Length: 266
Image (cartoon, rainbow, N blue to C red; front, top):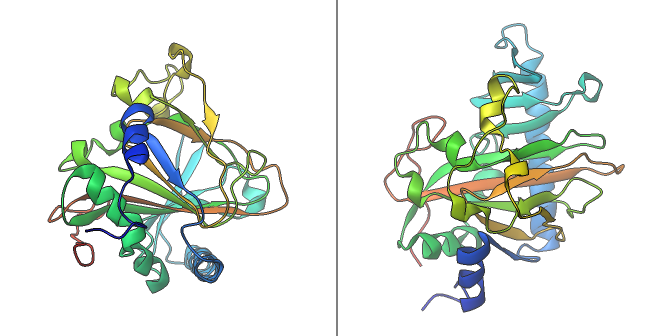
């Protein structure tokens, strides 16, 4: 029998099926979150240092987004160059062993295995989001259309977010449109440049977004097709989050094509 801290409750399973997500507050202890914060900042520092090297890969721009390949990770830079900050980096576990350790924690992958209906998993993707004060919003989108190019079993990919800092409406927490996963891939924005096809036209939906505001150390689990996005960080504090996506054992990671199976079965 799975430990209560890992096993899905009937309410969680029902909410995931009906709304496309469920959350668990304060899964990680204060000490564990402190370690994640240190790891996140060390990763950010290493990326900045590597990006400043003379032999660093060039920055590529698509619409208003700037990307760069650094330390085996795809870096998305903040829109505001004055911040000199990374918006996201993917994958990231290869840069710091403390982040890699989180991937194998059964408190995060255990519920995912139950949702998918398998005993063992492999990593699909991991991403560190760093939203500094003034950090830009991220338009509403679904992961499914984004991941369709390269996923070996897209129907059985599940994603989650670990809040390294408290997530509030003011500091740019995640917003979701409950139940939107039931529609499957939705219409994208038109006339929004190259990246517009990855953003969801939420004006076509009757449902309204709701914030997923949770304390630090909390974890929220999501269906790949739930529509979600975030707003600007309007506070003077950071809002950092670690996102993981899992798939059945034996499949390859989305970004780098490598295989990373997860821990022991439970």
